Image (cartoon, rainbow, N blue to C red; front, side, top):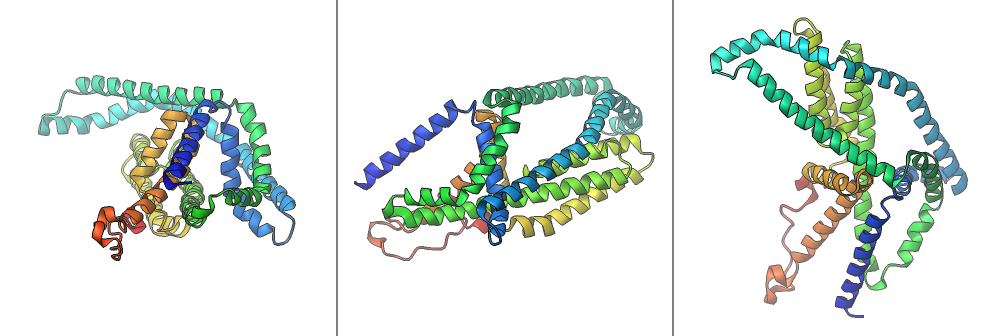
Length: 369
C-alpha cells in the first residue's frame, strides 16, 4: 500500500470517528467520564498491582475514590448549597449597599474626570449585566440540556462507575491491543507520539486537578477564617476554576474584593482578601504548578481556553471533557509535524535534504510556558 493510500485510509477513519462521536453524543457522556476517571486512577492501580492482582487493585482504588467522593459531597454539599442560596438571595441587598457605600467615591471621581451621571451608568450596567446574565444562563442551559440529552443524571451516576471499573481493570490490555493494531511501518513513531501525548495529558490533567483541589481547599478555608460572607462558595469556585487559565484567580479575586468592600468597615477586610489571593497565586506559580503540572506540558493557556470554549459549544459537557485531551494530542502532533517540516526539502530546499536540521526555535515546549 502506498503512503497516499495509507493517508487516505486514516483520514477516512478519522472522519468516520468524528461523525460517530457527533451522532452518538447523546449517550457518550458516562463512557467518556468513566474513561477520564480510569485514566486518572491508572497510576494508583499500577502501584498496587505490585502487591495484589489487577482486579483487586482496581476494586480497592475504585472503592477509595468513591468513598472520598461521597464523603466530600455529603460534608460539603449542604453547606455549599446553603451559602449559594444565601448569596443569590443577598444579591439585591449587596448591590444596594455597594451603591450607598461607593456613591461618595464616585461623585468625587465624577467631578474630577467628568464621568457620566450615576443614573445613566446604572442603566448601562443593568443592561450590560442583563445581557451578560442572559448569555451565561443560555450557555448553562444549553450545556444542561445537552448533558441531559447525552445521558441523564441516573445514567451518569450508575453507568460511569461500571465503565470506570472495567476500563481501569483492563487498561493495560486495551493499550496492548491498540499497540498490536498499529501499522507496522509507523508503529515506532506512533508509539513515541503516544508517549508524548500521555506525558502532556498526564502532566496537565492529573497535575492540574490536584492543583485545583489544593487551591479550592486553601481559598475556601482562608476566606472563611477571614470572615468573608459566602467565602466557601467563592473560594471553592475560584480554586476549581483554576484549570481555566486566569479565570479562577481573577474572577474569584474580583468577587471576593467586591463582597469585602461592601461588608467590611475600613480596609482591613479587603486587604486580607487581597493577601489571601496573593499568597495563593505565589504558591501556585512557584510551588504547585512547577511541582505537580511540570514545565514541559506544552499547553499554552490561550490554547486551553479556546479548546474548552470550542468543545463546550460543539458538544456541551461532553465537549468539555474531551477538550483538554484533544488539545494535548493536537499540540503534540503539531510539534511533531513542525519538527518534520524543519528537516524536509520544503524547508531546507530540494538540494539540502540531508542538511542537519536547525533547532526548533520558537516551537520548543518551553516556549509555550
